[in-house]
Amino acid sequence: MKQYGGVIKPKTKRAKRFLDNRAPKLTENVKNAMIMKGGNTSMTVTQALKDIYALKKPSAVLYKKKNITRPFEDSTSLEFFSKKTDSSLFLFGSHNKKRPNNLIFGRLFDFHVLDMIELGIEKYNSLSDIKSSKCPEGTKPMLVFAGDAFDHENEHKCLKSLLTDFFRGPVVPSVRLAGLEHVLHFTALEGKIYMRSYRSLLKKSGCRTPRIELEEIGPSFDFILRRTHLASDDLYKTAHKQPKALKPKKKKNISHDTFGTKFGRLHMQKQDLAKLQTRKMKGLRKRRGPAAAAVVAGETSLKTTEVE
Image (cartoon, rainbow, N blue to C red):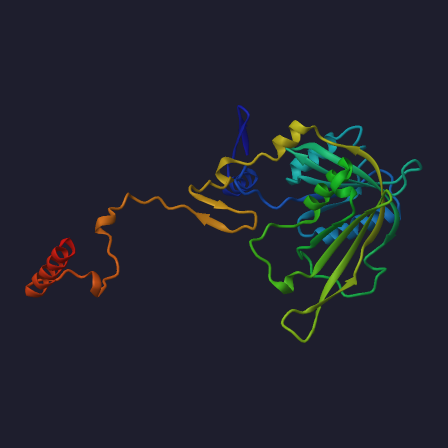
């Protein structure tokens, strides 16, 4: 590939396909995540990164080498790697005396850091610690958020949005019942965030609807909220902006009530009621011939007798 005046032109078909895949689209690709560790890590952080990578596969890249960087002080290294791997999500693990067993979840917009939240691991059980059958790779999880903090506190609202972006997987039009197999449950309680991973089992219930049981498969985390870096409202608005082609077109003369019932309004031309076809009855039928004349004569005779 060669660059002419800031425009990169491909020289081969492979390079052209690569640039077309990176080009902006109406419906963007699945968000990739890069998972890396800092200069100092612990066994807990290293294993936690591997387990989260197992949940995120195949839309993730795991860096095994150490990266000496501090995202809250300098994010240029993260922005460089995001541009290299076309990733808009990142997870950074580190460990030190001041902040032990540290994980940083973050998002990028236009290859620049949008927001990031730092979580500390207080308790952790890995995938290998919990002996049970696991979900297949690439299973789209169901996300459950419990706790009033996710709805009222600003930092927890941002954390909920970030975790949803990180774990939701590809956007699909429909999911079969047997595909609803993996459940990720997040609970905010007393200043801590509890993350649990379950596998849903469909049992016989004697009727058409199966009975559902949850089996913990790991990993499980007890997090504590630490530092946060949130974007401004204007930057959030720019990041959430959608192209006009994706916005649903407003249909005329169609409305919905509070219950979701659909109503339509029809516009018709003015009708001539004189020509309106009604039900035919014998009593309203016009008489013809001598029978009609006899009826008219009878009516006139009745009138003359009344006058007399």
